[in-house]
Every structure is written in structure tokens, then in C-alpha cells.
Image 1 (cartoon, helix red, strand yellow):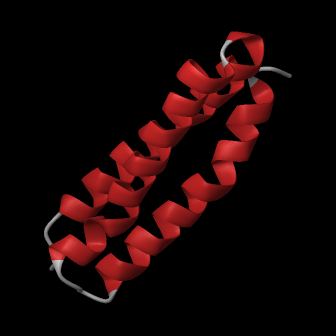
Image 2: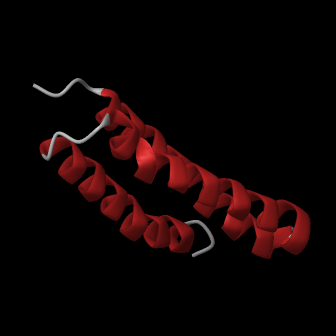
Image 3: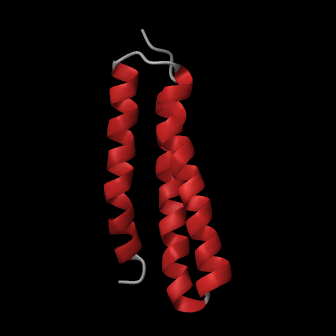
Length: 87
């Protein structure tokens, strides 16, 4: 449950990030606007990493670290989707 919980919790914002990025890309908005969800997610992952590593520590902090790594992976994939040129 220590690994599965943060993975499942990261799934909801990850899908939301993908949907927003896809919607912004479909609407043919500016590249900066399309990359905004991934940039905000990277900032949130950095804050969660800090909280898990510095503030909480231990096994409870590891849950925050798993969550931040999963969010970082979702943000990377959304960033790649946003960088694709619009036809």
C-alpha cells in the first residue's frame, strides 16, 4: 500500500494534466499556454519532494517522494505532448 497509494493518487492529477494539455493543443493555443499544466505539475512535484524529504522523512515521507516522482513522470509526458507542433 505504501507504493500503490501514491501511484493511484498521482493517477487522477496525471490524467487531468493530459486532458488539459490535449485540450489546449486541440484548441491550437500558444506553446507557452500548452506547456503551463506540465510546468505547474513540475513545481508541485518539487514541493512534494521537499516536504517528503526534509519535513516528514522516514516511511511516511517516502509516500510523498513516490507521489512526486509519479507526478514528475506525468509532467514530462505532458510536456512532450505540448511541444509537438500543431497541424
